[in-house]
Amino acid sequence: MTWKIVGSLMAGVLLGRLLNVENGEVLGLVGDFALAALLFAVGFSLGADADLGRKIKGLPKIYLAVPFLVAAGSLIGAVALGLLGGVVPGEAALVGAGFGWYSLSAVLIAQGYDLTLGTLALLTNVFREFLAILLIPAVARRLGKAAAVAPGGATAMDVTLPIIAAHTDSQTAILAFYSGTVLSALVPVVIPFILQLLQS
Image 1 (cartoon, rainbow, N blue to C red):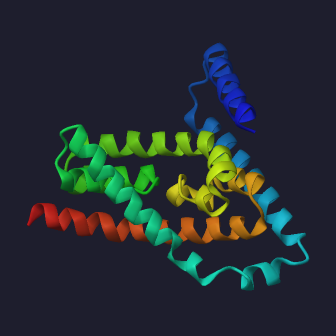
Image 2 (cartoon, helix red, strand yellow):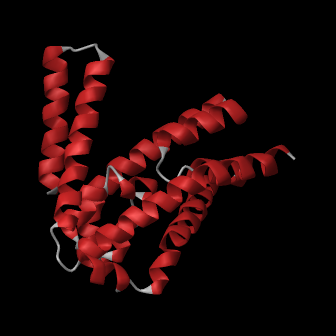
């Protein structure tokens, strides 16, 4: 699966260079269609599972804490790496609070605090998504199915959901969707909160 992902990316890079397409709307539509097709495939797989209801009920209650643990890990990791790179802890936490949702976090930070830090948030969260796509198969295999939900952060509900589903099971796919949804809801709450702390 990892080779398919990397191969598809490289094929896209080569084709983009050869065709030199400048129409962003066309490329956006192609990307949206591809993601919709992947999510449809995951939904179809879940819907075809006769035991889906039982699996949802069978989810351990501790799984409710997963998105909050992912959020805490993201913030702690960002601050720790920020200290190594000489970034102020509050600003590092601000970048980490995107939880993988690069578009919203970058805009909130750029408009509410600093354009440079907003750009850093954009690049960091894009890189997180790319790394998650590459690492999810190995994480699922070595650390367990539930752990595979963490790398994608907020993208576990959309972009990285098909990869999580392909390398785990339907229960973990449900957990991934739940975790990604909660993390997406936390972004517009946590970033303004940290901004307020930084500006006070």
